[in-house]
Length: 190
Image (cartoon, rainbow, N blue to C red; front, side):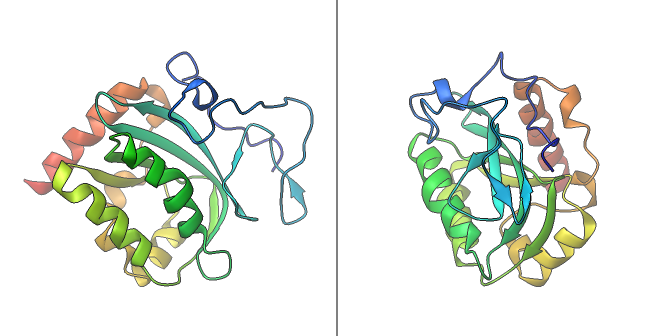
C-alpha cells in the first residue's frame, strides 16, 4: 500500500497545504518517512489523515470560483466502526462548504471496503448543497463498494452509477473534469 501515491500531476493547479482555506493549510509532507498505516500496512506519506484509522484522503483540487472540489480516497471507508463519514463531513466537507464549495467529485478507486451505518451525515451533506446547484459524484468506485453504499441507501445522496465507474479522470485538467461531470450530470437529468 505504501506505493499507492495520491495523484500529483495537478499540483500546478492546486495544493491544499498552500490554500489558507484548506483544512490541510501549512501541512508539511515527507517523501521518505512513512508513519501512517492502514491496519499493518504503511501508506504513502502524501495522504492526509482525517482522524480515521482506516480512511485517508487527498484534497486534489479546489476551485472557489466554480465551487468545486476533487477528493481522492485510500483505504477502508468504515462508517460502522470508525464513523468515517462523521470525520469527513465535520472536518473536511463542512470547511469546504463554508467556503462556497458545492460540487464534490469523490475518487474511490483506492477504496477497498465500505461498511455503512446510517445515512444521516450523507443526507445532511446533500441538503447543504441541493439548493445551490451542487452535486456529489462517486467516480471509479469498485462495484462491490457501490453495492454496499446502495444497501445503506447512500445512493439517494451521492450520484453513483455505472456511467461514473470508468472515467479516465487523469486525462483531464481539474477544471475540465468538473465541466465534464457537470455536463454528464445534466445529460442524466434530461
